[in-house]
Image 1 (tube, rainbow, N blue to C red):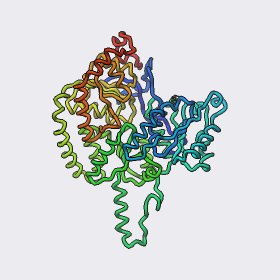
Image 2 (image 1 turned 45 degrees about the vertical axis):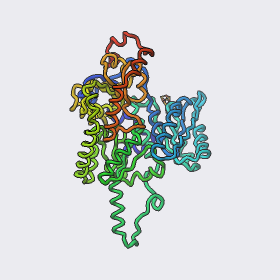
Image 3 (image 1 turned 90 degrees about the vertical axis):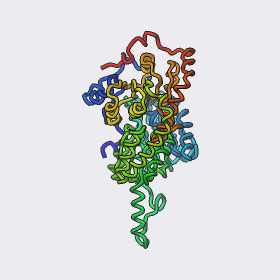
Length: 505
Ligand code: SF4
């Protein structure tokens, strides 16, 4: 089973080719990665970076009825103050009880770093189980216990016979990976290593009895239901509206969609192995678990980009429909949906035509969105991807085919973004959450690359984005006024230099 039977998952730095620093043509990045030059690139200066632990936590916090134990100094848990209410809001949007995850910290101190934090962890697990009765406890292994060598899995083994909760370790120390996408593998490894993914007979499903006079017919129906169930794998940036849109489209061709793994309970997770097909909605998110489910349960899987824009949605749907033999139904659905969507967006398109757009954020969304916006008549003047890994190659190759000359930067650095904005002067920016204040202070209009309260996928997503772009282009006084009154912290001399001046070969 390769990585899967190990206590800790490999980071992407060890499993794939990765990159966090690049500036060049989009069509050259794959060659640069394969020739090894991307790995040697870095920066002489970093303004800030992200820790993979925060993304693993972001996923774990959504799991229904879970408790999170930060095995860490107290500061590592600071991000839970924001993640917990977000998770509750996401549950409410999916019709679930909007409960916040319980989270505790072992609050490692200097003394623990010298003497070991194992006994504190043991006590905290028992306390969480006794006081909060969670179904799943995630023990988050951060930098400090990894550096001092606390054996977290051994602590879990020693207490699990005395707890009702399933306990699993999230191995995600920030220092181990250059790319935060390692966080997704860490979360999935925590699920597949200890959380049951098989349903229990007579509790989760009712087997067909051999003595039943309709045995053959019922068995056929059962197998057909199982085969036509599509497990769709979500991500924290994918909102309930996106999930509903893709389930709607699959339902229209006779397929039943179940959404995993965020916002699921232990009961729902047990049904994972009763799916006929696993489908990802983001190339760099789920390959780790989908390959595992294929190996373990022989469930085929599809990783075919993001269902963003006309081309992205068409390819995503057709690939699934093909594998179920319903390609004709899907083709006629797509033709009808595209026609209706194009009619709906037509009044807005003259406002967008030729507008110069810079796109920044996750590598798959930015690449897919560049192709989509170009198709809608905008002029894509640059793409900034937060990281590169091999999983992104199909989307980057599509982008290279459609927009061979578009400049690509692999960067999550605000100082480079601001420099690029000041020099490129785009009409509009589409950017990752957390960057809009910077962009507004620089005087530019922006709309979010994703927002879990809105729909981005499928045809509803195209319509929604087009309307928001048109609205933002017309209503531009906020960034104009803010930039006149809220200065940025950079010297003028920084804008005279190239934005990629600190990227090294
Ligand atoms: S980098 Fe390490 S110490 Fe810092 S927040 Fe992440 S896990 Fe905690």
